[in-house]
Image (cartoon, rainbow, N blue to C red; front, side, top):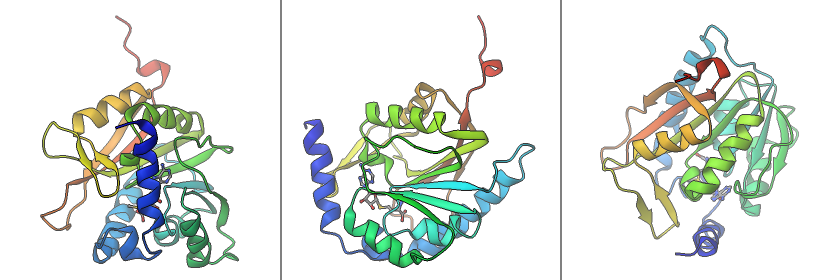
Length: 226
Ligand SMILES: C[S@@+](CC[C@H](N)C(=O)[O-])C[C@H]1O[C@@H](n2cnc3c(N)ncnc32)[C@H](O)[C@@H]1O
């Protein structure tokens, strides 16, 4: 499939999805609370690191209607910016979060494949959206995020992972699900290192396993000279 149709099909799919938690989660709205609780526990452990990220500014990538911003990031950070390519979701997110919420920062209405962060972030959260980027665009997106991390900042990826070594393509929403090894390779290519990884517990058995990764730039001192 051409690159253009991979992206336009996804945009078309999301344009026809209602701006609700159930819509955003493909009929799995009932797992939202478990997901948020798992993410809170993961972030709590990140904040216990010896050099934890700051709490000033977070970025929610592929934010949908702001489910993660509202329930996870806004309670923890001074300001939260959002990136979301679907205009209807952007409008819904502002309402869902409350436009006057003093923690709501800039909302960018653009696809991640074109997005270049304009600020420096403590935490960049990417969940259930990276399957909408091809490998090439995902590597360059992560490289741009890498450049947009404040000292001790982290990128969090929370995504479905296949149980085989194959990439699965979902025709309905035009997304791919990657195997762990490919995700790891992409992370390496973007010159990031995995600080911590976890599998979300408590999800139904008939969905993909969901992995959370905390990533940080590879420091020059981490590179082995051979
Ligand atoms: C499964 S929803 C997840 C939303 C949110 N991350 C959450 O967990 O509640 C996927 C979201 O990614 C957005 N999306 C799809 N392709 C995108 C792209 N190329 N760039 C930015 N957002 C995209 C969709 O519009 C939708 O809001």
